[in-house]
Length: 297
Image (cartoon, rainbow, N blue to C red; front, side, top):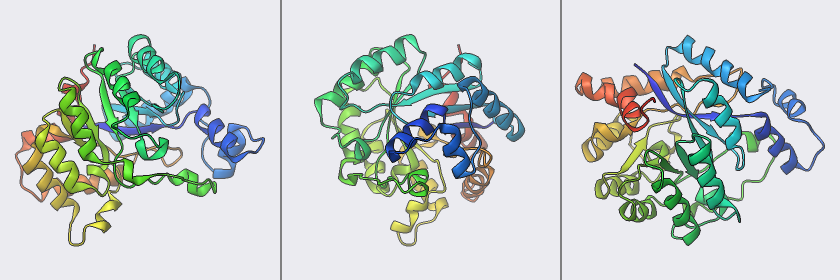
């Protein structure tokens, strides 16, 4: 059983937002044509595309992440169409005037299960009171996770389009996640990509806070910042510190026609197999932990 805890939902609104940032009068369809990517169409059409892709890959369930602020309704529509297949996450800019209200509405009324914070992107410290308010919104709806991107942040589509990435990497510190996780022990926190270069800090945070989980998604290119470390080493150490029950497999899949990233699964399966861990622990990492955190109705 495979569940993917990290897929991006590149909706029409996502591409419209990028076109607006370029300052050009492009439609989402025109931008997709420039990128040579598929036009996503309606949220329901994109959701159906994802279902076909997951079926072909024999992936049972997946998290879909609204990947620009104010696009939670797109993912909500996808989840509503296929509630047994998708868990909805959404990016939130906590510095926005309506951040708390949007968070409340998304988790209370739209069925979202995860609030995604990108402190480096939105230039908002995790110690900011506005971030704490957003976490309070999650805490008020049990079962809602808070996903916090830490470490290196690189958005490939922005590079392809020549868009500036004015990110402040100093703000994405897993130790600041630990402060929030301590204050809200009932809220599951997820740090993706093993901390994306801040592996030591992510391990320290997870060791201190039993409600911090690490997602394994992407090619984990951050390993180049840790000379001598391999993907198998990262899994071995994460299992030793956090335990197999707090690792969530993910791919970081996003656009079509590339689709779901099987090579990520194969690389991570090989890394875990090389450790000789118990079958039941491997099953937790690749699917069971996802189902425990996000049970179906």
